[in-house]
Length: 281
Length: 236
Image (tube, rainbow over all chains, first blue to last red; front, side, top):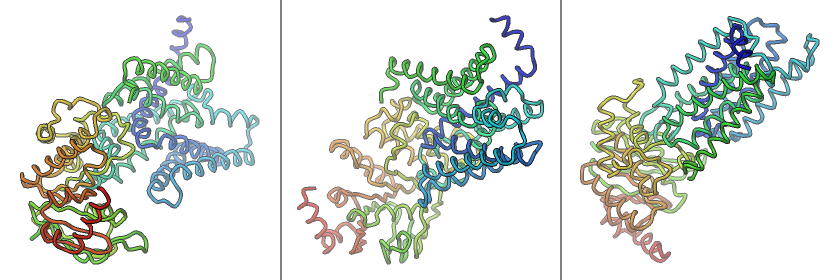
């Protein structure tokens, strides 16, 4: 078993997958804490469906670098979704549901009508559930993913205090002269980038798991924003690593294995929290 | 010039006006209570004073060298905060954020400022505790310490005692009174008319009848008499 693992580890594509996978897990868990606390857990789900729709269009247009289209469109949808939270024309959750299922339907429709691929359902399945796409990344994609995720981590660290202030109390922040709208926009842009990156790892249907599980798990164990954020990042990276290793060894789909490991980690944290009294109140 | 001057202010949502032709001013060191029925526009007025909302017409002038990021605010608690994992220290420190600008981290002065204000509110011992595990009174002290980090001059409070038991309520009022004595101007929304006439130097009554004046003038005025009677009759 271990011998098999070491053998696989020598392949560059496995190394790439592990590096990129863990970086994505790190980014998604960092912002996950903020999204869960702001009651935006589902935004990840909505945006990933948008990304799926755009990916379908990019596929039809035969774009060589589809990220260049997917990232801007996803960012735009994120901005629209965060804005609707305040304007009460359509309530936040309804807006997310509308945009997400709409994009999903159009994406599949476009793929179906214009696709030239012989294995359409295979294509759809791999975009939705990730299947093995993390193992088939080209060097260029690995580089792009690495650069983008490191950027997200750096921005998160630089704006950590502002993100905390805006998440804890947007009204107070605004009243005391913090430009809360600017930081909400920043959060929206970062989450869009993470979603698009995470599609490679877990596919578009399972992304919210990467965002939500580590954050909730950490909240059962710790009680300050800093420790929760650090713990969430650690749990997420460990789970991503274990999930990928298991899936390589057992031949299971990468995305669902990573999510399953995350769910398991949540249950462990819940029990630990219950024992230590952290989950009470 | 007064710290805050409100001229001919009209407030409302969409086309519905809640308050029309409001005039008042707040001098440094005043203790102003805003009273009135539910839905009379007290919270809307406060939001407008904080520039969270645009007035329909009229002007709010700030004077005496008061800057926009020198206003402290104690908002009502939100649902989000009830299960928020954050330590007392983190929350108090976040009150300094308004002065940070683009600076990413808190400087030594900010940290000292936070420590001083925790000391002032008597919450130094619980600095490491989690906010959601504190009692209602302790939570209000934490938020008050945060507001003090944002200002040295003026504090706006939105019903600071709602949901607190009588003993903690009295402590809270005393705390606010002390801050006022230290020279911080107070503007407070209150449901508790009894406490308002006891502590405030000025009263602003909003509703169908507008009234602005000192506490003594209010108690003698028709609006004030009416409102006080009503509240006492209602078994406050």
